[in-house]
Image (cartoon, rainbow, N blue to C red; front, top):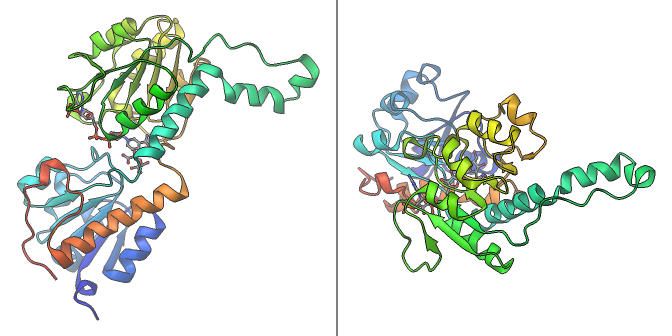
Length: 326
Ligand code: NAP
Ligand code: 8YV
């Protein structure tokens, strides 16, 4: 038996099957129905040195494992993990950047096109027999032509979206907390100023307290009656009640949403909006990309316990060093 096989890795809740199989083949896998320490046997709480998860990991769960060294988050967004507490407790947190960037950018552009050109509705028109019975689908009032794009959160995925939309002939501007190095796109120091300057706002900012409901009524009003809002980042960055109201009274033209504040529950007011295109958080959801994410999630554990380093540590825990290797 290899030394790694002695190491207890806890997987609370659902996780990609390839990640679960690799953890089971490499480490001592313990599954829990959810991230609730009351579900773990005392020896598991005592012995576990790692958690791999795509669910909420709060401070109480972290504290329940006295020998915990690393939390491998499945996903680049890690707002569901209390990273500050992990960092203060000497626990490394890793995520899955880069391997999903192009896929999510593809999805964002598809969602934007579908929102303005109504492809889902046009296909339904065909399938319902209306093309034969009534003629062609309506000319869409929306178009990508002539639009000005603003990106809220111009990081890895934001840049990949910007590159694509540049190729579509659209001007790009952005808002981050600070200007991005080596980027020539117009920078706006506030989200409202960005929304005023563009008519197409794409949010790909991380979730968390700093961005909570950042896309609010003021931002949507600034975006204006031709405004299209696309969210491929996190639902928590949007005031969903304000968005539903802005869609209903045509303060903005349309929205395309892949993410929601309380997934999988989608507010009825958004379901009722005929000018909203809604997707069930499928940004990275191809077999190809989810497998790459699963591999990176597990590779972080293998590297941590065999080489003493995390491959993709999140910034908040980059200072954490391993206490011992296998
Ligand atoms: P990233 O490279 O870290 O980019 C995030 C960008 O957001 C950075 O440029 C950052 O710039 C900016 N930012 C962070 N906090 C901000 C704030 N408070 N105000 C303004 N700007 C802020 O991350 P990524 O890999 O592009 O991923 C971005 C997010 O996409 C993830 O966190 C995740 O929530 C979401 N995501 C969704 C899906 C999906 O399936 N829909 C898939 C993958 C990722 P500054 O630090 O300069 O502010
Ligand atoms: C995944 C994501 O759907 O990486 C992220 O931040 O939102 C998506 O790629 C999610 O992490 C899986 O739960």
